[in-house]
Length: 256
Image 1 (tube, rainbow, N blue to C red):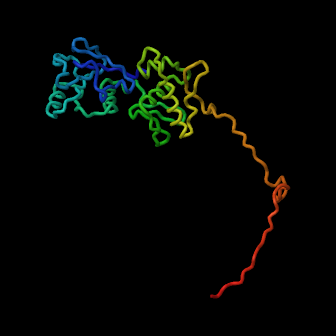
Image 2 (cartoon, rainbow, N blue to C red):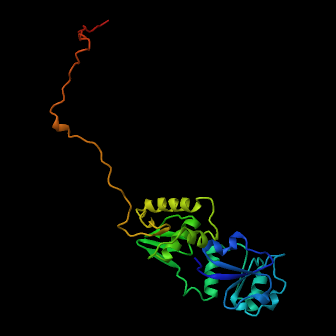
Image 3 (cartoon, helix red, strand yellow):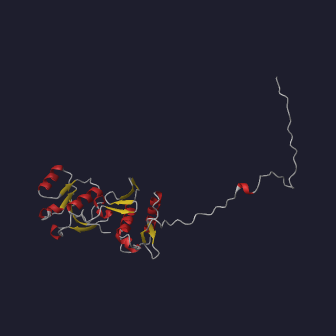
């Protein structure tokens, strides 16, 4: 699920979690020096002390670069004046960062921000799905699974593909994490009556289902009987029961 890719220019080999767009399905290209940066790909320049690339001043395509971690307002203004595409502090969330990179790289027109699966709308920036105006409340991996399946709704997606595209794994793990996430995803969809969306393919893997593939089995047969089919209910005494005489004493009221 390669939605887009960006360059990470930093001494640190990977960005911290709050800037790691791989959680949103992006592909990252880490670089330590400006001279190796490819053209046409938006770049995040790590501005943190100790992580800043020493030759950042040699950037030739500054309008395609966002400096991130610039907590001083005056420095941000200076970088913008020098032609940087944007300069952000350390507190920006992934959703906003993705939106800024998409706009910066001109990718917003080529990458869908939403996908529709039946009555369900998948929102890339919110990393969630909604029915009408109600959000489902998906975990990032659950959203990644659903987004990947919706990317190719006409065919099955194998377990290997899902592990590679959503989990970024090139090997088969010994855990059943994929199956657990699929089960949780189905449970959340089922609350809105949409449990049919994620179907297990007979040939392996999963796919987007159709509304008539709800997977509901036949209604359970409940043994019932008509109350009026056996006549009036009689109170009978079994032959082995000992007869007990019922006595009802009448007592005169007392006035003392």
